[in-house]
Length: 211
Image (cartoon, rainbow, N blue to C red; front, side, top):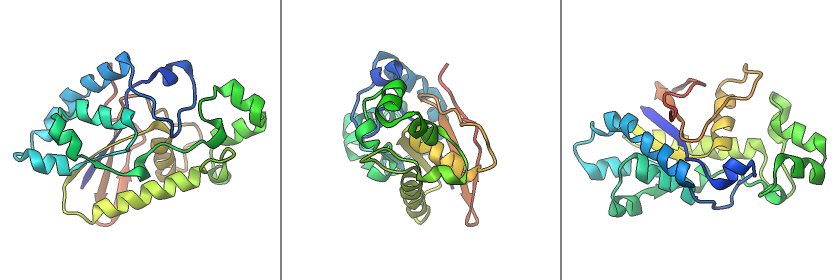
């Protein structure tokens, strides 16, 4: 069973270095182009589906518009197909609480430099890091893992999941705790997860990145 998890295209907040979290910020013009650049990669995978309805049943997205819009463009979904796409809030971006909308410097000023360092740190102690009113890294990891486990119970060989950078980093570092540097998850990048015999095989390297 193959899972293709991909980050949405760029938004203006991405470009400005503002923390989006659960705020529904739309794709900007570059983000739309990044989503379009994903089409050629996904065409080779979606060609396996002779029935478009079955393809749509294999697409899951965060309910945030920047993710669902990326899925619609990248997978060449028609408006009715996009409307039928499954939305799962467990694949939404981290709720950052009172830190949402802030830049790195604003966060450090508001919550202290140590809070920022705790947030970007790695290792077993980093999973409890969170901002006031928001989710911890562990909470995001656990809800995403639960959603993935549920999908493994459905008889579908391929899944396409539109999600976010923070959530993808949580999953990738969960499967690769040995990595001591942050995994880069660029806008429009695609990561492949394989589930076979009850075991996950996950590469920390993207299988596709926009040019």
